[in-house]
Length: 366
Image (cartoon, rainbow, N blue to C red; front, side):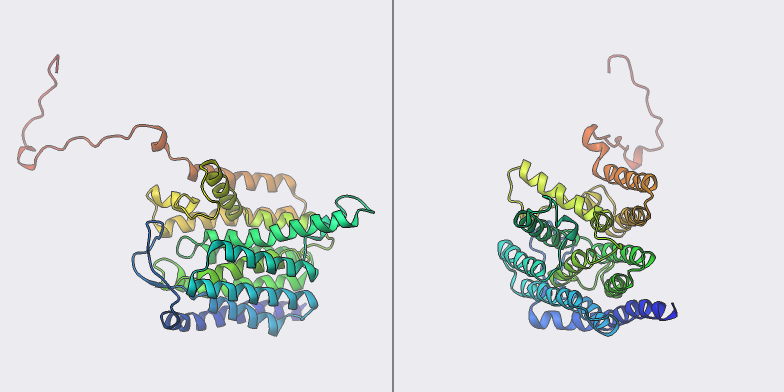
């Protein structure tokens, strides 16, 4: 058991330390290669050019930690190869700004490659029953691609406030690592701890006021690793629980993404079009600063993460209760009372020179 603790501890520590060391280096490299985020519209929360190459530190921390501490099985090697490809795609986008359709195409290609190498949502293998191998294979492929591409982009979309994507991913990864640990899935636990370490090592430089952004290289890499590592064996059987757990943990970014898609469909806008109506933007518009808004969403993610742990233990009532609390918090965040009620006007303040005069009572008819 001591060897297991050592592996788990070192998986986190190595990724964390490397990420901390490499982030200042990324800050210096970013302007040299043109990986700078220049605010061009009102959707941006910053007002000056910012380095967006923090993904390098996260990527190196996670990669080196996993190479040193994990048993390099076929699936782990495939995931690392796919994560590297997704990271490179993000780097190109950070420097050249790719079109949304181009990024989406390459994400699908990488997801299909994962399926072809046995990284898939496996509990769907016999969805149509035995003897329907072709239908089952197609259905499993579609769901796996949607899962990988979907989770990859949820992390990318939630990266709208300083520290939000890094902190949310860290909380979710720690939760899944704990679920893997209590079920004896130490490989999954070690991999998730490496992911959490990389994100947390970057967070001090990214929390408000941020010195650097992770960029698409970081958000796409984190999202891809979350989507693939979370389904390679969190529980001892390949059941629906293996997918329910990461869905519960990533509930906030998944909801925010689905809500954004629905909103754009209703308004007949392109699905990939960016806007300023995400949950974190709404909190800012309600008057919360970036720090408070980020911490509030950390709390939602934390509650959902605990519900995933209770779900893995078969505690249905507790899971429902915790998730209901998180859902209620999101509802409160999304509903602004001033949107439904007339604004309360500020009373007219008398001039300073007249403040000592008695206030006359209203006369009838006035």
